[in-house]
Length: 290
Image (cartoon, rainbow, N blue to C red; front, side):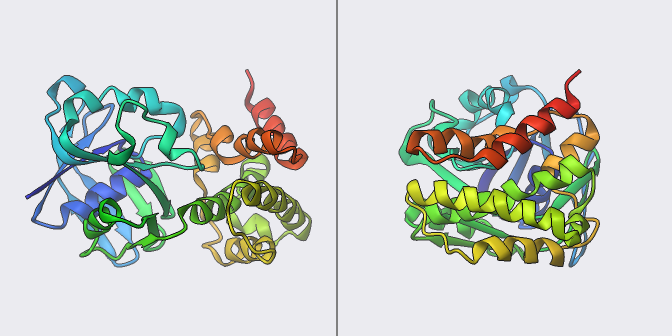
């Protein structure tokens, strides 16, 4: 029996917990802020249900084999409160969050037991424990024994999990997609907004800045990624809502730093300006101020 604790009952955490619980060799615990009855996820393969153990008090946590941190980046402090109870001598922590700084977010866990994870899994929470998963999705982790062990958790799911020899490139490639999604939050429109050519050109500009900074950080990003991001967005479900947009609609804090401002911050280190990401981040923050 593999013991797995998922911290965070949002769209990603709930979807992963539900899929992992379909395997009878997994003992899944979901660490949440509030009690939940069960999980129901509408997936491309049909509706799946799960009743993992639900914990709302970190004092009740016990050591597991894997901890999956799926909270928003700004909730790392709250997520870290679960770690003293969940982390045993051999427990591994998978950090499944946006951005390119996953390795730095939980400094209390030894680096050799931390696995940064890049996930592309379009999903939206419609109510507590109720989630719509738009497509099967992918997961990438660094190659090595720890990465292979994590990938094995998803063997019997439709989620395409794999190791990669170039995690830096994978992380920045995902950031190139994510940074462009700020246009949906700014316009309050779903993925279909990319069909507006003026908006698409703004997306291209955001991605160009991301590519420049990513290359300075060691990522191998091709020039044609600029147009590919727009194409992928246009091919998405027209009503698909990215997590930044979903948080805005729900009145929650947004991961502006992890998705856009990080490009500006790291760009400053390398002397690479990212004015479009800076402007869009400032406008979005100002649009909800007060």
